[in-house]
Image (cartoon, rainbow, N blue to C red; front, top):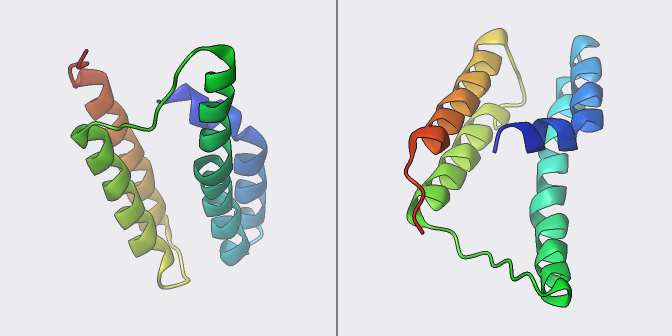
Length: 112
């Protein structure tokens, strides 16, 4: 939940930070959101199909806790990117949301 998104999208994160330093926030947000959409719309379904062939089923049946976490992440991202501008407080909000969701998954009991 914590390490895989950071390590898996390291190139996209580097690009987003680099263009944000150059004050091109529209490109930075596009790169960050685009890489997340790529994972959600391409990689996850490919992993489900690959799991069928390997005999290791992986379904996309999420429990309510995971659905709420995804919905909150989408709402926060939408509210941050809707005005087309950015400041340091919005960045802190995104980092705080990432920490809160990570801690929630750490302390949430695993349902078998």
